[in-house]
Image 1: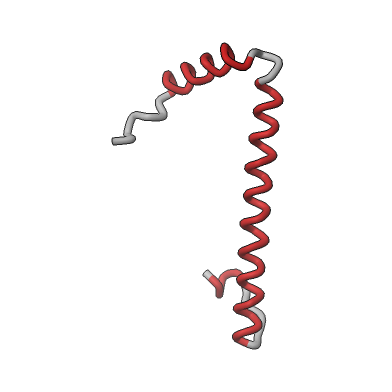
Image 2: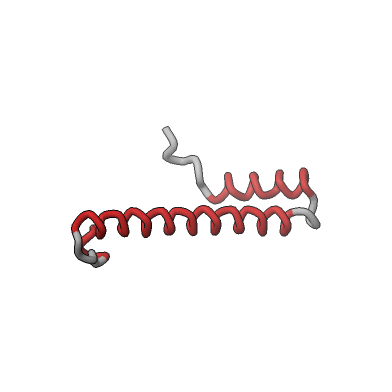
Length: 70
């Protein structure tokens, strides 16, 4: 169903429409905001993973290494 969805030509069309809608001055700001949002999401996921590992260490009574947790 989603096999051919992200072909290069489709992405170019989407970028062209975004350029028409938002204009060339607004696109870098939108890209920066999207990048900041993704970075924030990754950081929060990393913090949540570290908190979960800490809870597991406390339950086991000994520090877990990253390879042992996987």
